[in-house]
Length: 147
Image (tube, one colour):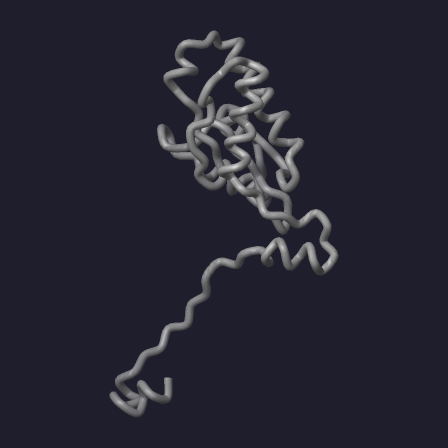
């Protein structure tokens, strides 16, 4: 600031201070400091393991196509070949699988998140507020604190 003032003059300077949104501490450091629940969730490995689980349990290849924070996108072409009942069963299985993973606090399907009556002050409301027709994912995950 002193440099700018000295080169262009104090009356020609305007400084705007801003702040970025905060992030949680680095999970590995939190873990070292005693927060044993803190961990890093590695989305590519989680997707690979989840697809392997779905292949083993349901015989489905490449069901989960992509992860975009904080949601998974499914293989729509594959889902179109399945019955509604089987699709619901698979989505319930995905939810149960994800909820068993370290670092994941909550999981919703798109339909569940759309229908959930969260109050504006609840963190879950922010997940619901990010929904965008035809662009949002199919399975939403909320990580635990410090993950």
